[in-house]
Length: 240
Image 1 (cartoon, rainbow, N blue to C red):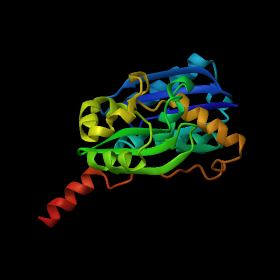
Image 2: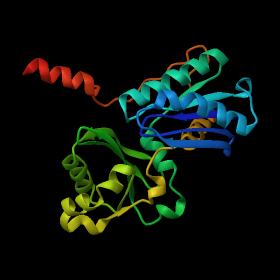
Image 3: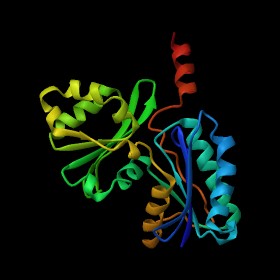
Image 4: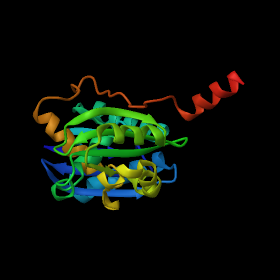
């Protein structure tokens, strides 16, 4: 099964083509809010590198967030258009789940839970909690640093924090946890971002369980977790 994976939900835009669980080709770039400009040529480049035509695709998978509001919309709109035009299934994947899936087995063996993090801007973080085996135990949510720290303290388990937000705020997190800091480790910077190859691999697993949007309804829902920055700014001005 050949699947095109698309991830534009963060600053790191990535595209991949997989066949089953094997990566045929992939590409990623750090995008400075140029998601729309970067995505189409990346899809063409990866498809050509994999040696497949669009008509050979069996499904499209896309990161539905959480992440950048505009970035998510670019990826989802492109994925929906492709799935509709090709009459193939469309699978939406949680980017936090993709972060956990990207971890090597040896990277989680000492942890009881994995806490994936994504920068939600406005001094907030999107996060969830998964068991080391991958099962989610706390649904995605967004809040300030204090909310993340409270969630870690509440579980009081050996926690592996992954994602660019956790890497960048490592010292602040450790200081905030105080005596409980010994219970926390951090992932490798190579796993700081969700990647399209993981998005596609998760989609493959779901398609094997027939858990995908039917070809005649190529639509997925973005995981915003909160209003867009523009809407928040407008509401703030309106209430002033």
